[in-house]
Image (cartoon, rainbow, N blue to C red; front, side, top):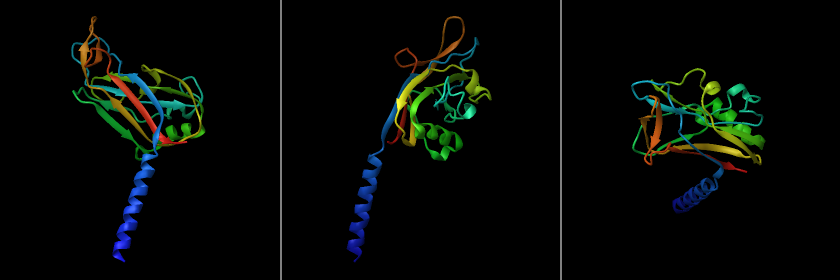
Length: 183
């Protein structure tokens, strides 16, 4: 009898593993951590970014009043690739992000970024800072997680005294945002 329970347990684990394997990237957004600072003598402490989505444009102003963003993520200079996985444990901002993909249709996306001297997120982060993005047409999907990957970077002072985030190749560090889920 215990042997049958072990076999059944192993079969369940195998099915659960296969279920996880079904999760696939439903949206991939590549950008770069290209924010720059004001003119200052010392390098900033951190690169802060967020990713946002909306079903009304421009920049999602018609949906969620700027709250349909993943929480701002802080990255410190590093010689290693940095990966952050965002799930429902992140709370209401993740839920708002997910609800946009649940609707499908024309989805606007953006990645606001800034360099911070103290590593803290300013209260007006979403409204006033640099952003890239575009529009993509997606069928409705259930989002399970979002993975943000940032290549190694350091800060380099540019001519004129302002600072930029620079990757190993001398260009802005590459950033990849993958939304995982099912259609």
